[in-house]
Image (cartoon, rainbow, N blue to C red; front, top):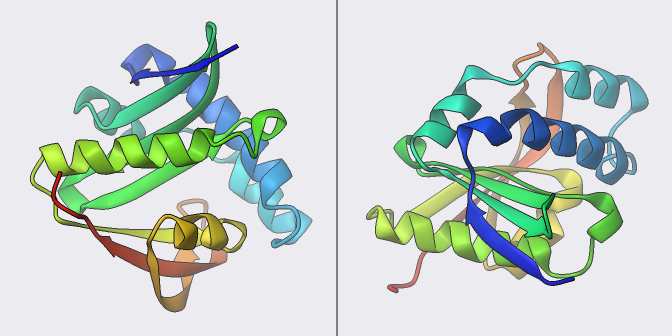
Length: 159
C-alpha cells in the first residue's frame, strides 16, 4: 500500500505520541539503557507538541488510514523536533520522505538553516540527509533524565 503525506492535525496528537513511544522503545534500545528508555517513554505529551500542530508544523505519513510516521518542525526555534517511523515499516524510505517534506515546509516559512538534537541511533539517518554533526551533548529531557545526543545542523538549499 502506498504511503501518502498530509499535514498533522491536532486530533492526531495521541496517535503520534503512541507511535513515538514504540519507535523509541524499539529504535533506541541499542544505544540507551533500559532505565533511560523507560523514563523517556513514560513522559506525557508536551504542550509544545500541541502548539506545533496548531501552527502547522507537523507532517504525517499514512499507509491507508494508519499513521506510519510523522515529523515535527518547531519553526520558532528553526528546529527539527521529531522524525519517527513505525518500527515495522523502517527502511522503506518513510523517514526520508518525511524529513524532505519538513525541510520544504521550513523553506516555505523562510527558514534557511535547521538544527536538531539527534538521538545516537538517528545520527546516521540525519547525516545521510545532509545534516552535519556539531558536537556530542547531553540532552536534558523534560522528564529530568539526561540523554546522550548529537547536535546537528543543515543549511537548506533554495527551493
